[in-house]
Structures are given as C-alpha cells and as structure tokens.
Image (cartoon, rainbow, N blue to C red; front, side):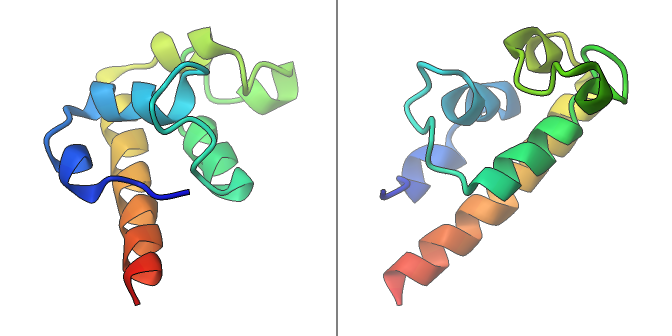
Length: 90
C-alpha cells in the first residue's frame, strides 16, 4: 500500500492522525501493526494506561488526547511513514 508523501507534508498533526488512525481515514491500515500500537500507546485520552483498560483501539482514546500527545503521535507517524516511503522508493 502506497502512502502519498507529498500529501502527508501538507497535513496538520491532527489531520495526519485522523488519516492513519480513524477507521475511515485515507491512510487507515497503512501503518504496520506494531507501529500503530506504538502510536496509540502515546495517546492519553483515557490516561496513560489505556492498554490495561482495553481501550487502546477506542477512537475516543485518540480523539480526547492532549495537545502534547497529539504532537507526539504525529511525530511517530511522520517518522515511520517516511521510513516506509524511503523503503518503497528504493
């Protein structure tokens, strides 16, 4: 699955997160499972231990995250999506 790198550069942090983590996002399903879990572990909508609460994949955990968590999740997505693009271009 190809990720459109030029489009990603133009997205705000929140738009980027929605595109990858929301079930209707244009890039939904394009992150490796381990990367998506790592991103979601950095959300704080239900506090820092969402995995233990069984809500790691609940959209509200992402949606209700703090600004700091949104920035952190977007940085992780940008890093790993860039790695995917670089690998695919070789």
